[in-house]
View 1 (spheres, rainbow, N blue to C red):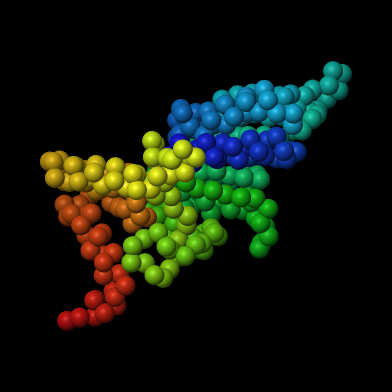
View 2: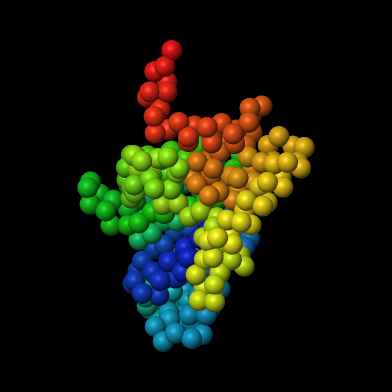
Length: 277
């Protein structure tokens, strides 16, 4: 989650840049800070510097080098045009204009902080035409983000996660939510995986230690905080299940966390439960 996703995504951008000739790789976000302020492009440039310094396959000649755009290649003295590998990494900020996602024909399109992305559903639909033609798909799109976002912006990512086939996203059996024996969803990484300081000597996640830390923090906030939304917020920010990640944290006076737990408990027999008089 979080920085771990951004680092892996930045590595994907560099894979294309150094290995696929004339490839275009895009990183999209609603705000520039998600790309350039400890964001995916900062990490991409750091990784690129390491590759250039240590890898024999690195593309060291650069035509364009800007905070939001890098292009490999070179000019020939006395000749017009660009020469070389001509691969590109391009950052794009959409702000509140979904149409900026149109025409980004690339090998990969990454959606950074998709949980804070206004109009992501429309933007996603527009960008799909840049990576597919009919039933043939020639590019890859990946949306990722952290739970706990407030307002309507998170609704888009929630829809994409729980109805992946509608958006041509790889669907998995929902083994992540409690008491969910049917249905599909996207891929989910819980907070007990890749949690700081919760690893064994080989770098594997220490799940027990991580869950103990998470639950200790939750209980402390639940019984000591005076803010009604604090408990729901911490569960959404450090979720153990997708239901927690998509939890509403504003606009209600009801105990959202408790209601979510109750809904999960009745989910296996929901039809019988709602059919009672």
